Image (cartoon, rainbow, N blue to C red; front, side, top):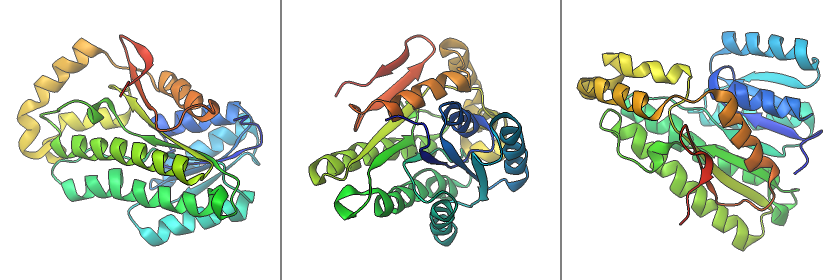
Length: 256
């Protein structure tokens, strides 16, 4: 896919990985809808991008992805603003073992709903023009994590859903490529959750274990993950792929 003049929607895009994904798309000449529940940080990011890429290339839309009405409104506003949708990046995510229902709602339920909303607008067999969806999973999609059982379950779910929907797209000729991005530890605000008992709950006792894992496996920068994201979007041969990104191996794929 040539990204110039495409329209992308990125959730959780005001900071961290989402911001890196949005900027990587802008550098390729795409128009980007920046969406986030944090409207203050979203406005700051929008202003920063305006200076670099021009005011017409982005729009910020505040959205709580766990609200089905807000999520539907997000897609409607995207189409009203730019007239089409070519790329969806489901990046919004949290790690809160104390509020585990919310973790599942944000990381998995909202992601499923966003995928289905995107299908409504993008499916070739329903009059759409196809496109690309990237669902942000994690290396936790493959490994156990004592400090975050529910977060891990949600990311296992993301990977399974992504691969299954990609197969449905292939069999049904939807014209949409759906892939999973599975990074290791990344230098974003979500890493700080391990330092707070109010987020890890009963699993706070394992904080030193996960800190040791960070020391062993290393921490990646968002720009490296953004490189992998762009590869998933641009490479028309990829559908149902699970892209892993680690400090030791860089960008590579899970072979099933």
